[in-house]
Amino acid sequence: MSNQTAVTEFLLLGFSDVWELQILHFIVFLLLYLISLLGNLLIITAIALDCHLHNPMYFFLMNLSILDFSYISVTIPKSMANSLMNTRSISYSGCVAQVFFFLFFASANFVLLTIMAYDRYIAICQPLHYEMVMTRRACVQMAASAWVSGILYSAMHTGNTFAISFCGGNRVDQFFCEIPQLLHLACSDSYLGEVVLISLCVPLCLICFAFIIVSYVQIYKTVLRIPSEKGRHKAFSTCLPHLIVVSLFLFTGIFAFLKPTSNSTSDLNLLVAVLYTIMPSMMNPIIYSMRNKEMKHALSKLLGWRLFSKNKMSIFLH
Figure 1 (cartoon, rainbow, N blue to C red):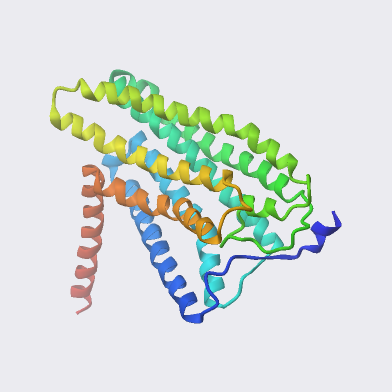
Figure 2: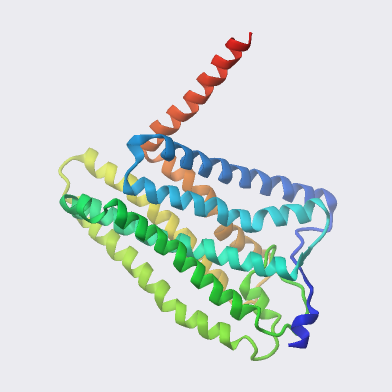
């Protein structure tokens, strides 16, 4: 363990040694971060203020938005700060915190997406039982289970990851503390505990994914029997975006964790990491607001009310 305690900081992947390119990276990441942050905060505010959106579907969507902007806030601000200050370092404790919260929000996000698939299955395939099954208490319990399972999953992985001895230096070939890159720095055989834990968690992820697929197969069959074209369009408009987000989040994350680290280039690592750390959090608000009439109406009311209040205040001041 002496090699582990000797590591006081890690060096993250730098995007470039050229100052102008570092500033470009900062600007691009800042724009993506602000888009994600603003979009998710608008969804949370709209759902909280509009009484017509106080139902299970939007309750889960609000939780998803909270997880999304928290998830992207774990990695992107630190990367932007490093580029702006022309540094690559992150403290050992900072890396531990980053791994913990990244896994926490990512795993809770995936569990919540599974719950949302179940919610859509009950709403479309068993509409007469929806109010009886998806009660307020049941929704709160399911949302709480996503958060609690995320904490437990993250605590196990974080503890196992940082219980290893690091003999491969402290250079992490990623713009944040990614577990596969940290394991690549481990001493020989000292990371087997984390590998075993990942192996035990894989079946749980596959079960969740299988549940999502089965739910959408049943939803697809039910939707095809809807005589109204408008009804079919409404069902698909709420389900297909959810399936797109799940697929993007799951497959890019799986690829990042299962690809051979030693044989991967930094460019490939960076591209995959951007896809599963930034794109889902940024796409969720766009998909759910653009493909959902109720959400678009709530957002237009929210933005219109704020614009009206601003104009009213300016008139009063004058």
